[in-house]
Image (cartoon, rainbow, N blue to C red; front, side, top):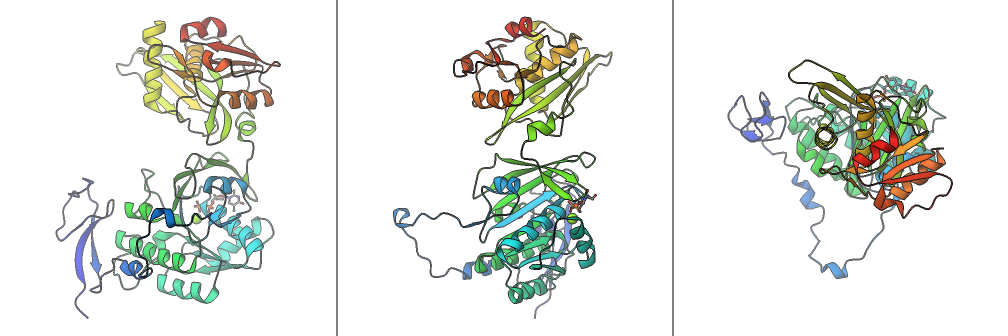
Length: 454
Ligand code: TYD
Ligand code: MG
């Protein structure tokens, strides 16, 4: 056996170099080059190429269409995010801040699947079997087909998977695994890469789906090489404030479904409970007709969701006034502020502006624009809206026009189900809405809205 070769690997992007440098020549991150040792046999994971040597190129017309065989996780919100359940042989990565509830969600999933389908192996490198049992005791009834293993050596893990023959495997977490033939520390780029390669090979060859927990860096990105994200089929991110009970499961990548669906959960004493009607929960504590508060309707995947947007505008003498947005894209907020200043002649240059979406949801897209604008106006004018139980939907354009949006009818429907009485929507969307019980006001510009609302 030859001598182990050392090289410096960037922990951010995986770039390799024989010399150390303070800054990675590839991705320009500082202090990310770490010395790692390669075994002489190499660890490029190209065992994969051996799996399907018999494949030959085929015409796309002759390939049979297949529908993926999926397993029901017993958790509707998780099924929805995955695109209808876990696809056999797929690799799913789940990331999120420490303490957010990844291990809890996966233990619940493992338990549900083992009740329905058979043996599930939950492998943890972070907690002992006893610790996992304590967590399990807080959840609903446990299944005898759920097997727990506390192990970090990937070779031993592989052996146990082969012996146990589970139908589903959970790895908590990829950063704790190590391959003894590689001398670098667990969590380093080469260990993570090698372990994931090995897991993928096992999963794909035995058609076992894997759920893998991955840590995030301080900045919120997945720790470890980018290749990890490219390799797996699905990447989920579990988000939320640790101090609040709501947790949102989002898809970042999905080879077997859309990436626009979200799942909403609440952390309770007995584990994570799914929230099938998020609007009701987000609006639970909302007092209507408050200064600076507007309820907006947005679409999350196929679901309309109603959330409260709060704005606070306060005068300041600072040269650079603050612009703080939680749950709203700051550049979108700046755009709306610029339109309000220019088209309605309302000054914000001498004001600090804070915007917050209640409940921890991130408003993506433009459906919330008009609502955000009205919340800002309500705060700057120090007066609440004169319309009772008001819901607002609409995009704001740079000329101050209110532009039509998709799915407006579904949001209005959801709103009337939730007891809203007045709706402000783009004029061009109004003709498609034929609800007699509620008051729907169509508007085409910001100027027009002001008179109707305040
Ligand atoms: P955990 O799943 O360990 O988080 P992660 O794996 O993402 O680090 O969840 C940690 C938190 O959840 C912990 O602070 C305790 C809390 N929790 C509950 O509130 N209820 C429960 O039933 C369980 C199991 C945990
Ligand atoms: Mg954990």
